[in-house]
Length: 253
Length: 339
Picture 1 (cartoon, one colour):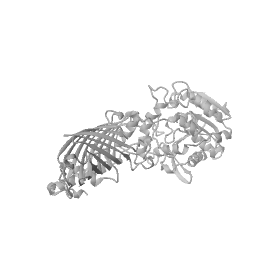
Picture 2: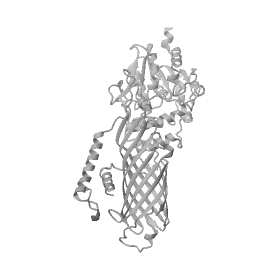
Picture 3: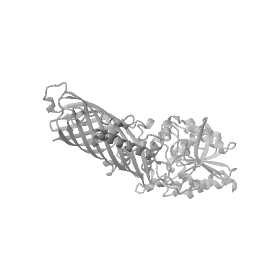
Picture 4: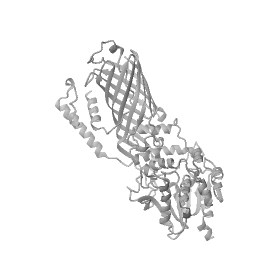
């Protein structure tokens, strides 16, 4: 847990201005067990729970995710959750994967409302005809939820930063550097490149959660865009599709 | 912030001082390492950053601009301007046309913001700027005499945009698999981006690693997506052709598409009463039949030369080099005068 805290502090202390990531929204914001209690000005810490589930990110990229969540009594306040997510983007190819570790810490908690802070770390891998890619990233965000009965309506904003990306270029891409110089037409491009802070994304979405004592369903609809893309922010030509559609279902143990 | 590692923790989780120092040290080492590594080359540098590239500085629309440009041929020879296809792309595929330097001063260059030429912000592009760029190049190499122009693919509409404003600049016109000069027909032949295709999802997934934060990253993303997108223009889908390029200027590409949207140059070109040589393959959306239907009627006398198999829109300069050069030598005046 301390290691996780270090990662969180690193992410928060060095983040560039804006954005968030495609992390499936958390499990239910309040449980039937909590609702059975009388309303308290300062509710008791939340019970410890485990949840496992499957999420589907329909846009901008089709991404299927398996996740595990451990709910605890909180490090900073009255509750929190640790997420482990493993994702696969099948339409982009079977080697396009990600692994993320997130910490959602509840900073405001009442009977019906909850405000949470996110900090996390992520590794992603992918490839296309030009290169193989690996990225180590950080994410942080803020989420608010209002619960009534078995439903929770909320909103979240988050920022996802690719801290370091490593590119291993293909032969075909290296060949694209040829013929540039009239006195030397045989040059080739580099084999490797390292990008620092190469990926920036902001996510803002409304989300809805339905839950029973054991099962939960979660959905989100919003936008995910690169704030540094300028006028290209919605250009599909450069891979920008600023739409976020996501749903997930989980089972609590 | 790195010194505040323990400040926000509740008392029961407070780090001991040694842990706080450890946290800060780790943070410092990580960020120093990251900053030291720097950003390496992602795309070929433009003339602004690579002094080895052939470059020409010109005054265009009141500003000094640097173009990636090669000119080959006798200084006193008539000038042949060669302009590439889609905005953002470059002249690499058209290098075989340098063979015409035996009779012409052949000038190949990447348009402003395209290929390896100087980058511009998207808002700086305009149709007027495009016309002034071609006029400025013409004036630099042939201030007193009109020039011949070879335009490939979108080089057709760009040439029309230039001739609309500077018709006196032209001597002879050659269009190779030119796109239509009107927006409605161009829309019919535009390349679709199928949202279900794997290459589209690869492009979307690529945002995990890099987003279009600057020209280099935007150009890289467009370049990588362009290759599979253009494969749709191949005549043999099982063995797709690839269009050789160095780099695609994303801002120029997107701006140009927006600027040309809704524009129709047909009446202006028809009114000039020009002759033209139209060269095209026998397959693909811009083939010889397309040229006969949409381009030839705009000229007083349009000669059409068909390129044989396996030439298609992407590989024709490589696969049909001799046919193209032969057609050009049969048409261009400098070769005729010698005969």
